[in-house]
Image 1: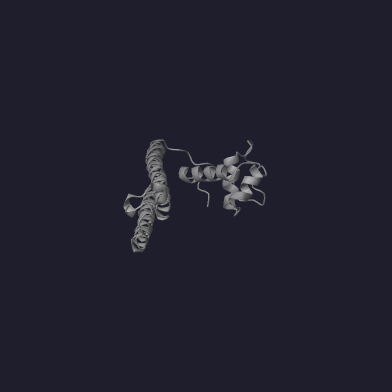
Image 2: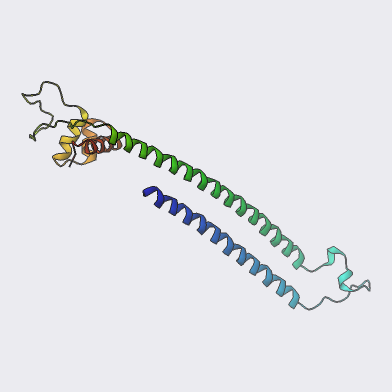
Length: 188
């Protein structure tokens, strides 16, 4: 269920990126139209001193808008190719993440199936005492980290406190407590 949510978020990000690129292109295209309209509003240049009409002048004597227009077109084409490249990379990463999420879901389902098929004995937990690590007279073997973590969790200690006391990471402690819950030895 969580992976479907993440996949939905990725789809949304992909759509937002596409929408942003479309809006950006429309803004650039609008600016190009605006520049073209400004150019058409300028009065026609007088004829060339050489006697020929303005449209047949050499490229060096064209209006100042031509180089600006060419620069804008070049920048637009460059940015468009960059956006296409980014869009293809986002699409490829999205596909890779979908495959990874699919694999992770399969692994979780396999682990759940194995858990359901293999009954796990409940972990014996000594009765609550002021110090759950203190050895009880009935038990000769020392408590395992899992038993300590479950006992401390039942006594109200946080995961970070248990992790400090065991010298393990919080992720390991959460995994130990989660496995204890699944096996029926449940940490409160």
